[in-house]
Length: 528
Image (cartoon, rainbow, N blue to C red; front, top):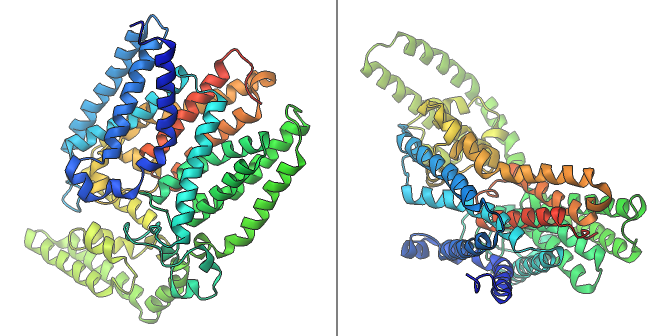
């Protein structure tokens, strides 16, 4: 036990933690998540390594924890997770609907999902006990941002970067320099131009970079050298290459907000020294990348806009809306009068025939109407979709939410909202919504949200309370940047999804939350 608590052991494990976080981008490389690799291990090897290292770090942090009631706390929190998991599993097994691909439930994968949601909460504790100071956090942030952005930029320039959208294994067709060609977006869509480097998912990388950018700016304002400035510019460029709205537009909002914070702490609170050179550099970044922005993939996401008028004109010119409306009135009367199973079956065939006839006119995405949620299985749903404006039914995020709501209503079990219908059903459907509020409401339920996600919100609110109640000591530029970073993570989760249930995002969220708590609660004066 004495060896475990020795300074040498603590120093070794601290270095392991720092290295573990710095190389996180390498754990998120696309090839580690290919089916061929996952079929060998049943899970991505990155998941197994991450989990193993986190368990070791937590074990030592727990042994070091100087709290006489720590075993009571451990049993208490473990009981909460175990009890929730049991009831969640029972409810998930009972979930049953006649339509779609929502019957593919895996007990093992669901268990690993729950563990994956627990690990970042352990990271908060580990970070706090390992005393991740602002200096250590800054080291991690700079290196991680550099690794992400350099890989994304190099792979884009040489055109071997993976597309952010569409086929997950397809490469971009043009690089950054070709954004400015006048015929680029005539010949190609943004789906073929937006790139995510060689990483697994664009939304996850987007969430991480949005989370790290405020901290990078604090680092630069504190120490405005060439390296820190270069990493900021590279990070912004990488965010624009991603093509997600959160990253491609978020950088501008973050830079403007951080400039305002900087000026406040320079001239109002007067806690940091004003540096005109660093401010000019950030303003130049804002100007230069704002000039580039109109040529970026995110500003050329015009599929829905380009097709809305054509679809609506086609429906109007051919009187299709009127014909469908009359059909619905007639079929409703038939359903009211029908009594036998044979009659209802004939009515269903009529509905299917109408959808088959008009689905192309309405611009339904074949992947959704034919595969993900087949119109022959639930014809009522797709008939209702004909009443929804094209802008909504062509938006895959909106369509996923509508399909999931339909499935939940068909299962008709209030417990789905309380303890969830399962992550694996939504992921395997595949109908995984790109909004963390909706997806977790259905996958883990209200209780799951309280257990796995609300702790981050509690830390955010606690941090806000702490910096204002201890204004002189704790209301610092660095602490505000951490609070801003956590708040941005929630915003990214709502706007793009795939944040609160993915290792690459939640481990850094846990790291930032733990570092914030340590910085707020340590007796020594916090960094400015």
